[in-house]
Image (cartoon, rainbow, N blue to C red; front, side, top):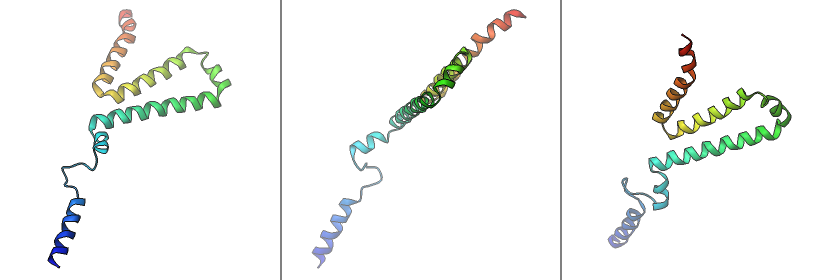
Length: 112
């Protein structure tokens, strides 16, 4: 009887993984913080491409009318670049924003 209980408890203990061990190597590989950041970056990139494709598909005539103004196209590209930089990290985003603002505000400073 004691032998059966000991065998049963050893089988149960082997199925319970300690807190500091992973369930499987492939699963723990995707749980690393840099892997989660990269996967979220890829997800956002593909989601933006998919919605842009849907937008182009369903509003072809409207899009050709709107894209005649270069301001809309520039704004769309700028927002897309900002979302990519946001996924890469805050320092790159702030650097890009500061360089963009200084570039576009330079002609106004020269007027004064």
